Amino acid sequence: MLVKTNIIGFNTIVLREFNRILRIWAQTIVPPAITATLYFVIFGSLIGRRIGEMGGYSYIQYIAPGLIMMSVITNSYGNVVSSFFGAKFGRHIEELLVAPLPNWLIVTGYMVGGIARGLLVGGIVMIITMLFTSVQIHNIGVVISAALLSSMVFSLAGMINAVFAKNFDQISFIPTFVLTPLTYLGGVFYTIELLPEWAQDVSKANPILYMVNAFRYGFLGVSDVDVGFAYVIMSIAALILFTVCVWLMHRGVGVRE
Figure 1 (tube, rainbow, N blue to C red):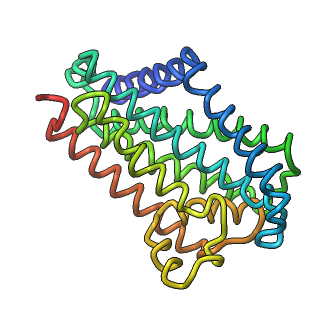
Figure 2 (figure 1 turned 120 degrees about the vertical axis):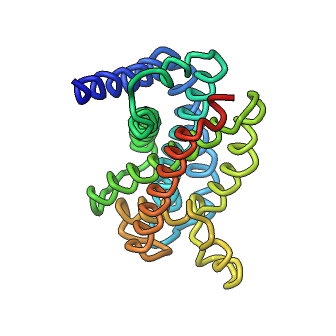
């Protein structure tokens, strides 16, 4: 009976999140598609012709995996932070708290919702990519697993942001002043081999660098970092953030105040 209750509760959270993504598609799907198109037009087609090759590929081919991953990261994060904070703000988070669902299952449900939006938008951006350049895949397993782990990490990070946020301004602070700079400096638009040695060392402290390069390796077979180490970073980050989210839910931080 308990297992059946957990399954029903989990499915309800996931379906609600997925329906929310589709219901407000003008906010969840259209903006990242337009943004990606502008990136390809400006950086890929216009500026890329002047830059030439990078990493043995045309510039637009080189940045394509980074732009897809950037969409996966930002949308996974944005989905959970807005949805969970909305549940707090609308006071229907209390329905989850009184339901006979373990905290880890609630966290997993929201995480799956974030992954769904991240991968959905990533897939749309990949289709847009095909309009501007040819897409080749070096290792499909790496492409899928890197996208999945990255969206998992940032879905959980978004949940932590939502737990501590007390108003709408606080859910936009981290994406604006932390996530966006880390993404732009994470090797999306360039190889860190162009940087001086000290800047390369600083860049390697950015976790997004490993996600972008693992994903790029799946497409092009090139990477600025060791791909195996990148998977270690992503896996440890996902495990730590999941544990923190469950602990915060158990303590009632931000949801029982």
